[in-house]
Length: 102
Figure 1 (tube, helix red, strand yellow):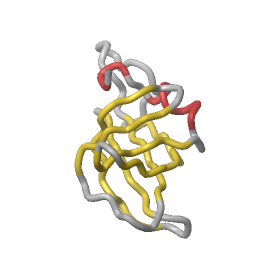
Figure 2: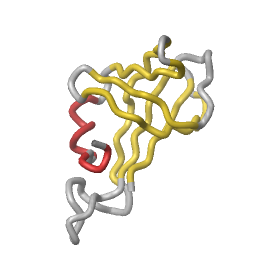
Figure 3: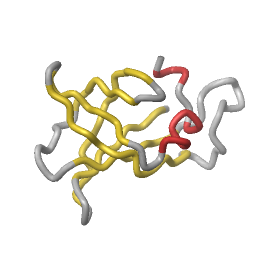
Figure 4: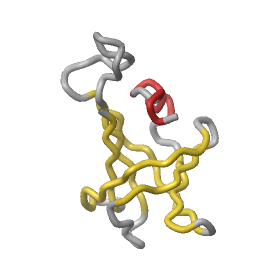
């Protein structure tokens, strides 16, 4: 499923909640706050049919801080998928996490 995702998969869902499960019976709500196309591309497919790299930034609560690892993520419109999240620091509203797609 991840190989089919592009920046356009997530862009319509900016500001929406996603659920991250650090444990099977636990979920933490995070909000998608940024979708950035990397390397000057415009999203969608790359020149050779590959994906144009992009990153997602989510904001979660101040606590608990999720360590860098793969998590089960759920979104009402996209579905369930596994995503490698990296904590990238606090801002005024909470902890931010990044996922990079290459």
